Length: 340
Image 1 (cartoon, rainbow, N blue to C red):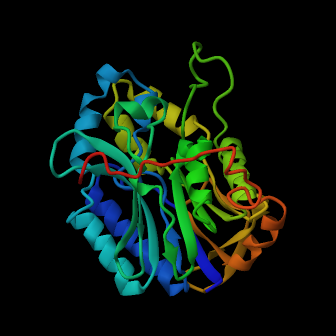
Image 2: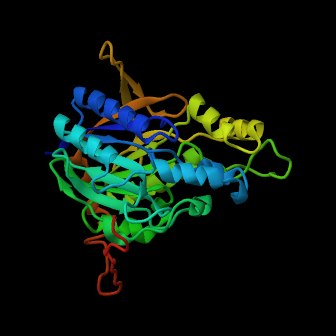
């Protein structure tokens, strides 16, 4: 099928509650399915939270955060929360892309920043662990491997996914392009602070989430000639209060979280240009066209025609006719480094 309706969930987790966030995830899947969606996407590390505290206070103050993050991270193989989401996907006949903090059943304290692509039959089509945790993320997650750098063939085309900073890695991106990717999922956290404007020691400009995420996602779409689904998280007031309440300086943490630039959720076409989405009023069914979601929780929908990915290959088929395989050699180690 060349037509697919997609939904990107610009939602906040119930911070540090795998159970409650799973329930919220399942409710969003049900809503998306009622709106005839084929694929629903959730942000980076949606369950149970993104470890933004590691950017804002010293590592010596983060031990309680890490213990709680470990206890609420989820197991993939025979894990009750992942299994519940897989069952909901199967029940509704909908594909799900899910960002999680992954915990291993075989050891304590080893976590991965992972993304799962779940098929409409409930099967796991791709299980990707972020290759390199970025900046302060290294305090929470271990490096992943190439086992999840796959682009499954689905009833709605070939779908691939990378997590946040991986969309800056040209080799990771090329590994998906060479598999004929037609829909590319990029997931991001709600905020990613590099400076705190309220502190005198933090002179300079903060990282611009929207510009950075748009630039790299658009570049990938242009090169791969694929659609882009950019799904970022959201941080609601309850999440800010929960994180702040555990911090050494609660007022500072609260101000820093509330004042950091927020990321956006949006779509891109196969030329890298913005593609408007729409929200749906769940009571009336009314659709409202919007370019992106940023400051409010909601679900953004778009209808994609995969035939639009073909024309651009005449110009730059960078994994085909516009490549010199006699000059360049590319290999990917797709072995799983540590089991589940």
